[in-house]
Image 1: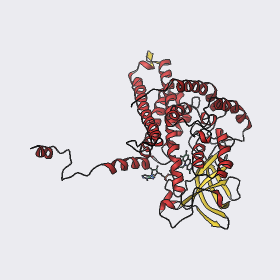
Image 2: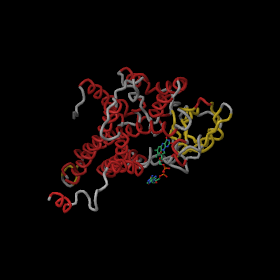
Image 3: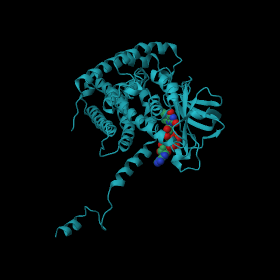
Length: 426
Ligand SMILES: Cc1cc2nc3c(=O)[nH]c(=O)nc-3n(C[C@H](O)[C@H](O)[C@H](O)COP(=O)(O)OP(=O)(O)OC[C@H]3O[C@@H](n4cnc5c(N)ncnc54)[C@H](O)[C@@H]3O)c2cc1C
């Protein structure tokens, strides 16, 4: 059945969320700016400011909604999560206030899925409580997205794993209580069975943050960078620090990256909606050449294109969310969630680029200043097309999924060849 409605009870939760995020959470982006600010658990002032908000969210049953009830979340499923994430995507701080900030969400998921009872108690519980943050340390400086090229090694010595190698763009490592490190433990296995995941407390001897790399939008004169270039110098952890079995690292990584990508897409809908809200307000408020901006057809074109593209993207995200829920319920939807998630990943970067660019353009010189949030959002354009794998990798995945199920023409000409079809009809 096709249904584009939200049940009234949940809609009232969403209405509360929208008001709460707009009035209480969005101001935090201005009061505590910087991409790393929501992750800095050592900042007593910001933590004290968000604590009552987090308590309010918990009291309404909206805390950590990405996890099922057995893990401390309400387990609403992906459709409801999509509707919620659209609201949370409006603000940098909102995911932290609602206990759903990446990469902690993905790390929590793999701890819940593959962790031992002890690992869950030590790492998952404080993560779920919002007391600590974590880091996913996978990408390598020489290997980028391709896990098959990884060289960071771990080997067993007595009752310890010893890790040696480098990782690149380990986001939030500087704030994290622990790192989940992907290392080659079984070099003789086939490529996807060579790696394992190890949980490494950040203060373990030998963990060396070479530098915290800054990105577009970070200021030049402050210590803003949050993406760590890390060296693991013979870092020793106990044997039970492994998450999953030896050689299962790729499988564990896949389990977390899918969810992460679609949640980013859901939040991107919200950020684009906020940019579109800004566009229409500006168009209705500013005059030039004797009329409102809203009356100029070029401006109407920008607004229409943005709304249409956003609605199309939102439908794709919702279909993906529905498909994941179907699989969870034991049914077999026609297209795999993996393929749909790859489509969302590709389209997210494009739609975000186009809408933020138009929103900036419509605001003229004010749009490029740091007096509006748009300039900061523009900084995320390039990252969205790279983080969690470049666009090309996901496009190739989408195309291969379709090619795999497409037939090969039976004869010399394609099956739609008109003379051949006429011949067959005779
Ligand atoms: C903001 C941000 C946060 C990140 N956070 C983390 C994190 O927390 N933990 C972590 O481990 N990593 C993280 N990453 C790293 C991210 O996973 C990598 O940037 C990504 O996988 C691409 O790797 P690369 O940057 O080395 O680019 P490369 O792999 O060198 O790719 C560069 C370019 O080469 C082309 N290319 C690459 N592969 C293919 C292909 N198969 N087919 C066609 N063309 C291709 C594309 O044009 C691509 O953009 C983050 C990245 C960003 C930008």
